[in-house]
Length: 374
Image (cartoon, rainbow, N blue to C red):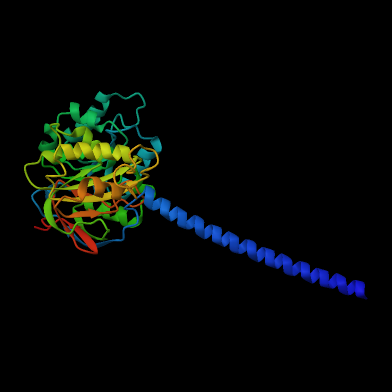
């Protein structure tokens, strides 16, 4: 009897200990998960900025300005080319399929996916897209590098003669610079990614912008913002590429009118970002801007460079912290940090080469195109 009783007690105790142990492990796992999540959030803030900015499209205006005829209509033929890096067949097919679904007739350039294509081949594709009277717009498949080489050898007179919009971003910044220097509109927006996972609200804004429906944006503010209102031609894109086109015949920062500068970048350490921004600063690009909008800065690694801020008044908390402390804090112009456009998950389209208005308040900022409806 006692033996059975002891056995029952031992079983109960064992169960209680097991439950206690399991509970302790669960709490430890929950604590570890919470800690890991917090660390991931901090790391995200350290490596990428602008990706989580709350944004609202407060309305659309049909573009009625001088260049209203530059925008596309359903049924238009659109050239599909890649003046930058070589895209995959899958990226090109996704672009063609997506443009068809948007109501266009995509026409693939001869050398888009040709593995052994040359610089002349890339130039030929771009000049074909501009010269062919049936083509109404140019949609780039991807960025990467080397669009600046094409800008160097192409007939840039064709840009102003035809006024066809070019769509893309990242390395396509070189094309935007050439277009905007010639006074021609261009659209900073997703390329093949527009049809392969871009959030619906971004893709819809891009689809509408191609047809001249221009959004007005309202975004949450940042601790680094500089308040005020500015107007000017919206130009810019990737600062690494803007650095490569500085002082060329297609440098859009050499406009003879006020401009608002948009900047975003990806996979650069602080050292590289500092190089590019220093070139822009030394060429008067920052000084002559009437306003600046900073977009997404993705995968900017502070640990892979000598320039971490340790010898400049304290380690940089983030790339925005570095940009603020080293380049922007003394500029007496409106500056907004965190527009969700660039290489992150969200990439809202921007109309470049047209007058924009940037208004920065204590808690938010707006970006709109005041002449769109005139």
